[in-house]
Amino acid sequence: MRIPRLTPRSALLGLHIGALMFGLTGIFGKLILAGPLVIVFGRALFGALALGGAFPGHLAGQPRPSLRQLALLVGSGLLLCAHWLTFFLAVKVGNVAVATLGFASFPAFTVLLEGLLFGERIRASEYRVVGLVCIGLVMVTPSLDLAQGATAGLLWGVLSGLLFALLSLANRVSVRGLDPILAALAQNLTIILCLLPLALAELPRVRALDWLWLVLLGVFCTGVAHSLFVASLRLIKARTAAVIFALEPVYGIAFAALLFGEQPSLRMLAGGALILFATFLSARAAQ
Image 1 (cartoon, rainbow, N blue to C red):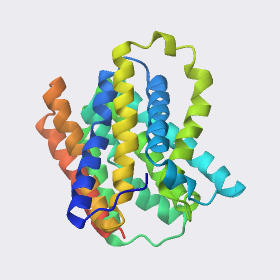
Image 2 (image 1 turned 180 degrees about the vertical axis):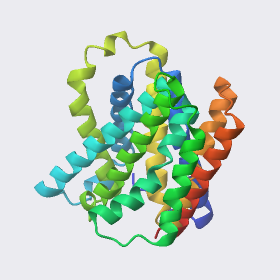
Image 3 (image 1 turned 120 degrees about the vertical axis):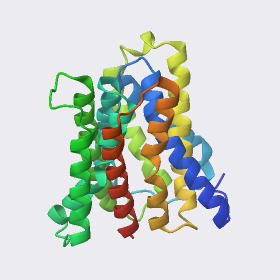
C-alpha cells in the first residue's frame, strides 16, 4: 500500500487528526502503569509494526540509505529514544499538563541551537519567541522546590523539549534525501534494539491492559499520526502544518483535565498561553 492521495481539505483534516493523536501521547503515558523504559520500548515496537505493515509496497520502492545515512539515523534514533524517555518520565513525576507545557519549549531551543550549531543569524522576532517561552515557563513552574513532583516534571519536560529540538536539527542532516516513513521506521528500530536488553526483564510483569494502551500508543500516536503528517505535507505547506501541530499541547492538556481532573491554575494557564503563543509565532515564521 502506498500513501493515499489526498485532497487539500482531507490533508488539512489529516493534520488535525495527527496533532490530536500526538496530543494523546501524554494521556497514554499516564494510563500505562509500567515505567518509561517499557512505555518507550512498546511505543517503538508497535510504531515500527504499524509503519512497516501499512507501507510495505511504498518502502520496497525506496532507495536504500548509505552507511553514513544509516549511522546518522541511528544517532537520531537515540535522540528520539532520549526524548521519549524524558517526556514519559515528566508525565510520571509530574502530570500531563506540566510535561506537555515543558515540552512545548522546544521552539525556543530550536532557535538558539540553529544559531549555535548552524551559524544561522537569529532575528529579533526569534529572540522574542525565546523570551516569551522563558516567561511562560517561569509562570508555569509551581515553585523552585525540586522535591515537588510538578516542578521536577516540568524540568523533565523542558529537557524533553531540548532533546526534541536536537532531534529536529539532526533530522535536517540524517533524513535528507530519504523517505520520511523509511527514516521513522529506522529510528524506531534503533530504539527497539537499544532498549530490548533493558526492558526484557520487565515485559512479563506488564499488565494486559497496559499492553492494550501500548498498542494504541504505538499504532495511533506513532504510526498513524506520523503517516498522516507525511501524507498531508504533500499538499499542505510546512508552515501551515507547523501551526496546526502547535495545537498538540492544547489537546493533551484538555484531555488530561477531562480524564484525570488535572485542572491547571490560572497562573499556569497564563504561562501555558504564552508558551503556545510563542510556539505559534515560531511556526508561522518557519518555512
